[in-house]
Image (cartoon, rainbow, N blue to C red; front, top):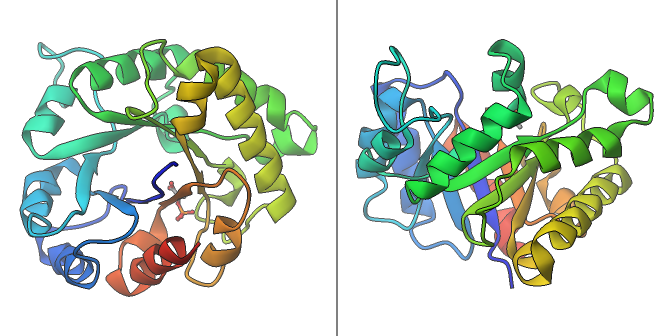
Length: 249
Ligand code: PEP
């Protein structure tokens, strides 16, 4: 049985004053029936870890370098994230792929380093609107999976997040059939490459405009093991009902 996961990506949002949201979440969901992960900006990571220390909520990073240390001004290593209290790191988010030109190969290398530092790699894949309209979605996802996931993964240290780029922050959501088609495809690809044991234990999250109002129906789709949530993870009042919907799914 895969334990479900509600993950929040705060992106470049959040100051110390906003940590009250996390404390509120930890009070409301001290020991939830699903895993909860919040990925704040790196500047808040250790304080966020302290804020949730009396709960089972975990914190994670939003990116890491391929190396362990060295002359890389402005970068953060997986070991540093771990040292600051992270248990996981988001890698290959479409905003990193677009803003920083990250390739599948780079994401794979980062994921290898993250896993070697005992972090769970939350690897994002997703098609653009043009790719979907050209009926290339599954080819794109298949290529990203093959290129971005390192060979060393287990069912525990890998999470795949399917995030159609056109659904991120737009309020647009694929149909439940479209979500199911991609999640079933990802599951089949994972089983083919890593075998049924590992392939069936990797959690597959949906991400893209998940809100309290649409979470329950999305969580009912086959092979949806939770969500990666951007905007609606910033406020406890929005993220809490999403966690509850996942607990009820
Ligand atoms: C995200 O950035 O991973 C995301 C899914 O954002 P949003 O929920 O705001 O669409």
